[in-house]
Image 1 (cartoon, rainbow, N blue to C red):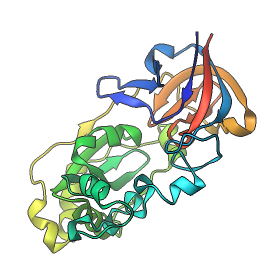
Image 2: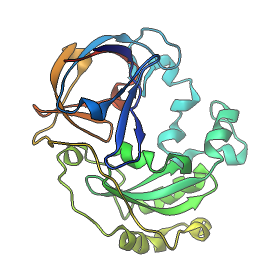
Image 3: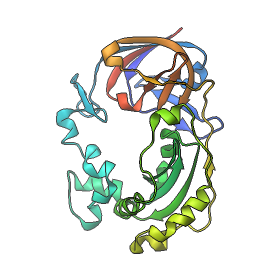
Image 4: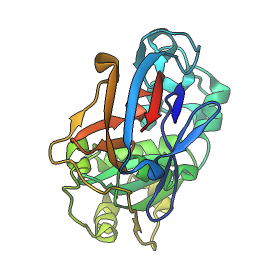
Length: 264
């Protein structure tokens, strides 16, 4: 079977194990069903997720011009503390920014390679945790807009990490942590204007990934440079495909690439 389409981040379903779907325009693959099968990935061309043109992808699935123009790639996406829609101030597209920023957001702790703090829209729980490859996570606060979540994350970054070590996450080199205790320790560092949104009573969520074999020394696949790769799929974690020879392919980091996928 052969499939072709533009890569976007895999869709997921919270189950045990988590179900992964690679979705193309006219087709989709349940990646769980491909475990222990040989998969060939070929680079075909670029296709910017905004303009659709065959131009080299710069970041986040967009070519360079689109990346600096579309609201989906503005600075407040990665740095929520820069959000201004609650003030009625436009960055690139105020209507888009109001829809995205003026909705409930969660500040959370997730344990993937280590305990880290993060921000996501409430409707992206637990999807965000799955995408990060976290095996456990817990909500700290639920706030009404992205700005409040952002300033909380900034305040907590002095006391807990805000980045994931992708190699450690993929190797499953992790330790279980008591996230309830972490949440309670960090409570004192939450900004005053956010304290009323602190979540007093909740438990951590545990996530189970479909991995048959973890890589000992993960090697990241650059499909544009290599053009074609074949390997036996042995796991999916975060947004990574894991192959038997320790090659890993970050689907999300390759958004905007048109690929041909053959299942042997």
